[in-house]
Image (cartoon, rainbow, N blue to C red):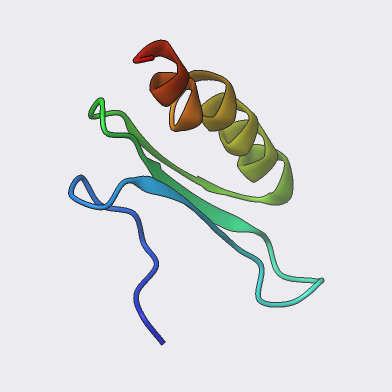
Length: 64
């Protein structure tokens, strides 16, 4: 399986939760240079909400 971890050359958001009882983990890298990681369901949810509101597609829409 390919490494799905985002990098500056391949920005994005990656979330994993190997089992229902394991804590979720996430990493995000934006093409603007911002990056973040989170562990735990609540922290991952906050990271995803922040990334989608302020990075990723939000930057693409601003560039149009």
